[in-house]
Length: 425
Image 1 (tube, rainbow, N blue to C red):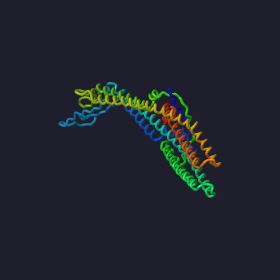
Image 2 (cartoon, helix red, strand yellow):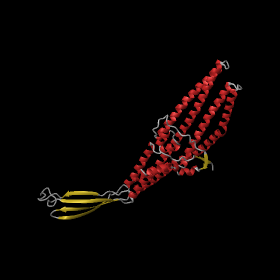
Image 3 (cartoon, one colour):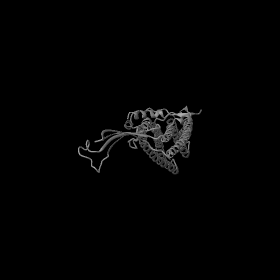
Image 4 (cartoon, rainbow, N blue to C red):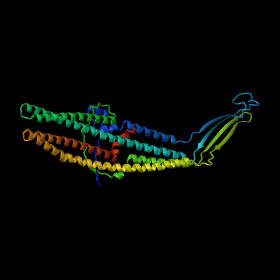
């Protein structure tokens, strides 16, 4: 089986406030902050509501207290004396309670519990998605920082070359045309520097949006903790079965089955039992009434409720199949992307970038000794700049792909801390 990249698990350390005070935000701190962002908070609220539905479902019908005044003779009068003990009024007080048949309460509770299980899985899935987005945004910021540092060095070098060329023109050692070319390169480098600064600000804004950090954009810095691109086996098909979105779809299927059982249980009519005590002066002050009532289900057998529940069950089954197929395809894609991007990044780091550096160093040395033309020097510098940026892009892509794979393959490593935090709230 093909090997899948594994990202070294960062250990959560400290609060985001500590990251702000130290000036550099680690990957672990960014992920920890993302566990409590607004999207996760909204999903946590949905879970709380679903759990409250379980409490509401798991109760029997409440008894009904009733009072009655009857048999009041308006033709001959009510008689004299006390209203409660002597007037001829039949006074009664009673209690009625509905006995649910067909195991309706248990089925109702089971439906709500399966919905709560789905909400729990939804919370985990939303958390994983936010961690994935934060993970990618973190390395976008780190890459933007390194790109800015590289472009700054290139801009400084281009400015120095332009200044040297200007002095050589004044000394009659260089043609004005060549000096103008170096000035153009310096201006291009300054434009690239401005673009790199803007890209870094955009990356910082994206990370701040996901984590909820209050640090200013210019002050938000990512620590240079690039992950090791190691490989470990992983079965995408089996891992897809354990994904929270797949478990949520399975729980909703179970909830739909319980709802169908509950709809079919409606065929068992409920019985309402009641009893009341009557007080009728002149006849008796201790009269007892017992009663029972139930609906007459003639001509209707809850076909509408059962049909709707059956349709929702079929819909939930199709949704589960769709989610499982999509999850399996995504796991396979993440695995392939992690493998391919890691291999590409290692190729740049081990072979392509060192060669470009050697070529550029040789060109600088030869130009300094007058053995190389300005055109060849500029070409060597452009090649090195393009190779450095490509290598940085490859490393960023690999870090993001490896992290996305691990967050889906082993989400429990990232969710344990958040779960323990929720249990204490």
